Length: 547
Image 1 (tube, one colour):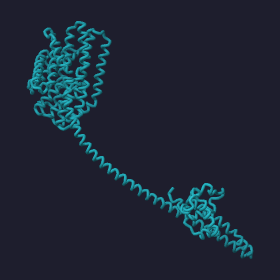
Image 2 (cartoon, helix red, strand yellow):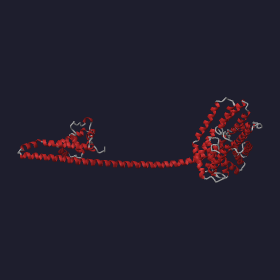
Image 3 (cartoon, one colour):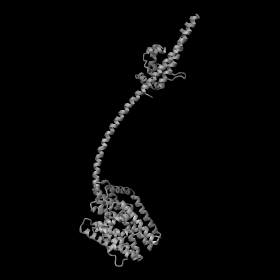
């Protein structure tokens, strides 16, 4: 699973050594100051919580990391398509594609390893064929094909392996035995058998690795952990983590081992801290065949952080499904079922509480609606009263103004009449004065003046009076005014009624009509109405609703 990087420099050897040494020393010092160490100060709960929040943010970016990895794999496939099928470059590119699918999609990795074996056999490239077979055996075990994996590895002749291929062989067998041991976790002797084979393969692997390399230090630290030498393992792996970039897959493995060491010492904060760092590294590398986030989910479940536990285990089960790594399926599913069951119980309790809250809020809402309705009703009443009061005040002002105007006019007319009378009497023209008063011309002129002032004043108060009256009359009995009329006799009688003057004698005296004439007019108007019985009441209601 580990890959070696080959870096080419164009500088001198001394420059390379000095630059590399200074870079590693600077990185080591900086990270040792920032990274809580198992051997140093203990990890606080605040530090653990901070790295968990970092993990939560990285999970939201997981799909983008996976997309980048797919793009890189597609790029390798595109490059291979331009090469001759079965050629050495084509086979080397096939190896790179298969490795790119490691820990990402087990079925695809097996496909390309099998394809490499087929074409390497045809090309009689035994060394490449052996490497393809060794690596395929590892991923057969991940997919649950244990017997096929063992048959594959046992069929390989190790006597003639080159040094580099021997390292690949022991690395692959170590992984294979480790994966097989997972199937027997909790089964005593069977687990011990495969675990011991894992340790033995790793011991054989170490001499084949470059001393001091990252891969060597990782395997050495892991070997010390398997052998129970936790202090030495922690020392090596802490320094390794300090000098590795978080994007390096070895970083995730080293942090996972450090979390196991912390767990063995009962330091739960450190265990959570390093598991979270391992999970973050896995996510950034789009590594799907992992255990860190799965173990972290189980640990957080035990500590009561159910939401995170549920989220992390959901991510873990999605990873298992996408990577086709059956070795992780049973453990993840079992943990997820436990957390899911507890989560469902908790959700049921929250639903009950939610229903209670909803009922309470509904009652409050109904009470609020009733209160608002009552308040609006009262406000409408107040607004109506205010409007009526304003209308009454305006009417009062108009009444006073028009009364003063009318009084002023009649005072002027009375003065003129007095002057006329004095002149006629002084001139001895009593007969002419008698003729003027007897003809009623003066009264007629004054009545016309009164009607004009009254009509204007009334229509100023009730501008749509004519329209409202016609609405109460039958269509064929509508009142039609002449061009020079504002009100006619019918409308004036109704206007007096609207003003509250219902006394026929008073109306007749004011309009200079006989009482019988007023009775005839009122009776005739009732007969023209749509509703004869309520006609006069309907007249009184005109203008009571604010417009």
